[in-house]
Length: 223
Ligand SMILES: N[C@@H](CCC(=O)N[C@@H](CS)C(=O)NCC(=O)O)C(=O)O
Image (cartoon, rainbow, N blue to C red; front, side, top):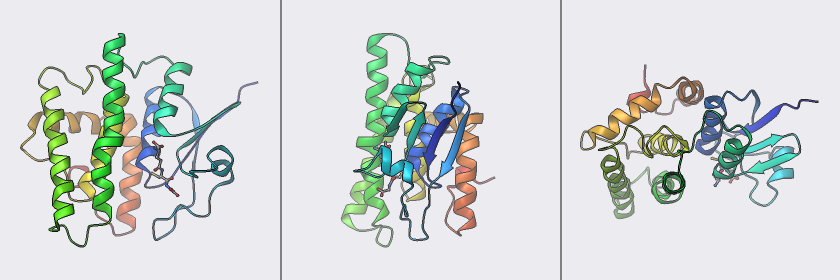
């Protein structure tokens, strides 16, 4: 018996978008459920599948594939790569894979925490913590610019690391810490990733949702 793969995400979930993009890149048919999302950006009421599979954190994304139920976008990436190896989204070779995984983790855990700080500082972007968070993003952009001196994508071939950092930086841009002309290779990378059909298929509806609510859409995503 074949079962349908299910992904639970949210209309503005950057972690959910990572998983959706990866599944599309791998050509995995899936059923998408957008969990309830209130006007004040709360994920309420919690979807029963989210409560069942992620009872403590109660967060999306959640993936259900037959007997497997998982939460956390990075954990889901690992499962998708094992379960659907082609096309590969980790590079070949132990060292390159380790570097790619580290980059994916840094996008979520080193870069994105700056963006989370900016969420609460939009009213005072001149404050010391907001300036520090923007500087943290700029430093990270410089580091990624350095990597792109010798390769087209962050870890060599297009990978989960690109998906993670692309989505994180879309939210950074929304919150006032987008990339600039100071990192031209990174800007070109951004446009290459943006133009992938799987990325469009996920990010376009997200931007439409933002626009429908009168919220800002990053300039590089306005058409
Ligand atoms: N580390 C998790 C983070 C997931 C996360 O922060 N999800 C947010 C949406 S982007 C969420 O569900 N928030 C609702 C809540 O915390 O109640 C991942 O990579 O999936």
